[in-house]
Length: 288
Image (cartoon, rainbow, N blue to C red):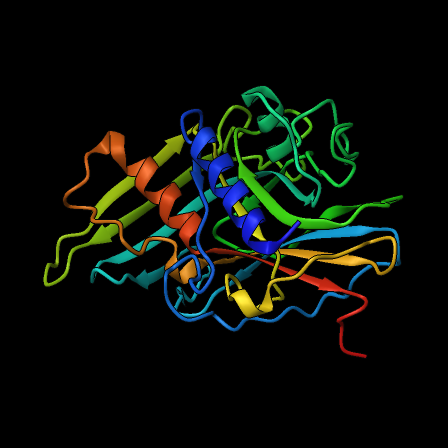
C-alpha cells in the first residue's frame, strides 16, 4: 500500500478513536511540534532478523536539574517556568502495524490500532503479532531510557506505528512504590511561574485518561519528513522502534493561567504527545 494511503488511513483511524480516547496524528513535512525535525539519534541497535525491539527514550535538552537531583525545571514556549518534583507516566502499548488494509468496525479498528488483546507479560496480541501491550511505568523525574521488549517470528511488512499512554495495571513493569499508578496513566507534582511574575504556583496532574498517537515510519530524527518515509520487513532484517519524547517540550503550549484545574490534564497529555516522535532503525539501514 502506498505511503499516502497509509497516512490517510491513520488519519481516519485517529479521527474515529478520538471519540473514545485522546489521539494525535501529524502530517508529513511536520514534526509533532510542527517545526523542523529534532534531529535525534539512538545508540541502540536493531535485533536479529525476524524480531522487533521497542525502546522508550528521552531527550533532556533544555532541562535544568537541581543540584540534589530531586527536581528539574524548564522554560516553555509561552514563557512559563515549570518545575517537576515527582511524576510517572504509563507507556502501556506500542506496536508496528501491517501494511495490509484492515477492515471494518470501530472494535476491529481499536484492536488493530492499539493491539489491546489478551497479551500480557510481554507477549504480543493475537490480532497483531508485533504488538507489545505490557505497560511500563516511566519516572518523569529521572527520565531514564527503558527497553520495552522484543517480539519475534514476524513474517509481514509494516508501515505504521502506534503508541499509547493509558492507566497502569498490576502487571505493568517498574511500578513506583511512592505513587499508586494502577488505574492512573499520568501523575505529576510540580509548580509553575508565569512570565514576569515571582509567584510560584503548585500544581498536580492526576489522571486516568488514555491518549495515543498514530504515525507512519521514519528513521530517528526524520519524523514526518515525507522523503524519509519507510516500510520495514522484520523477516529480512531486524527492526528497532524507539518512542522518543522531548522532556524540554512537554509543557509547550500549556497556558497554566488560562486553563482550569479539570482541563490541565488534557492540555499536558496533548503537549506530551506533541513532543513525541517514533523512530525506526532496520538492520538493512543501520550503520555498520
